[in-house]
Image (cartoon, rainbow, N blue to C red; front, side, top):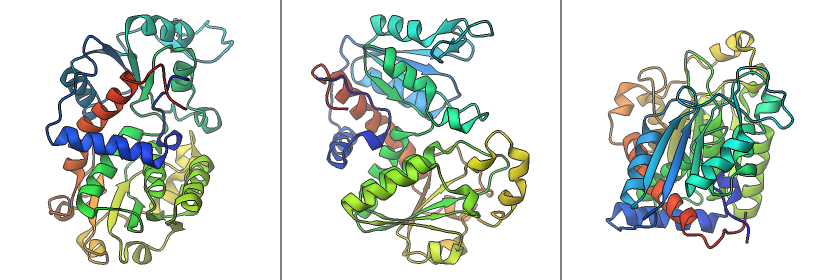
Length: 340
């Protein structure tokens, strides 16, 4: 059987993801596992982290294992991933060697590597983690690249705790303001997860240029066709909030201006009033609201909303620990791999 990785929730079925969520719920209720007893996970960070680094390191320890944290932007050799690259620049090591060497030391490898914001047509292929998955001989876990699957498991665990069966519930994924353009990873994953679980998803954006990459839009439409629910993209704020059961906030840059952000400014200005406020939340069906964190208060979400009982951001962040334990356990205990 093929060794299984955890690169995107798109690669896992709804029942498989629910099994991970159920296991995470068991961990939250006190279940104990020593699935990483005598095992090691390498946590390779090309970008900064607070919640991801802490929760993976602690989770590995609680599973009986050891985590080695590698700062790939400062404490390891600069790394090349392109096949056939002529390495006459800053990069000293190729993923082909790094992945195989790490695989000889550890039992799992987790990667965090954001886009470089230079060329979306290249970066949409997720080249660094794709190269690790190709050349490693142990399972690879995505700690955020152009998707953030662990974050959205944490989101779904929080939603199920408060809404029960989420199928048929109204889920609003809303663009919110930020001083600069950000990665689309969390928005991509929220879209995938909500549609896969049968929710009626509304994506609120200030302009059509903020539609997500067609890979994720098409995948979401496929999940809707297979499992029910719906997907609507709108610029109408009042219609988007009306009757929503859950509101999820995220900022992201417009892909047509990827790497050329100055030209995005007029379109970004259209969303100046998209901050989540009590007035907007009053249009919902007493919705819960969340954000992946870190979050700029009174830019993305008003204090009155963040500090209300409806805000699930802290719960979602705390869920990172049990969901990642469930993922690490599943990959560490697979019998030479699963499907996918």
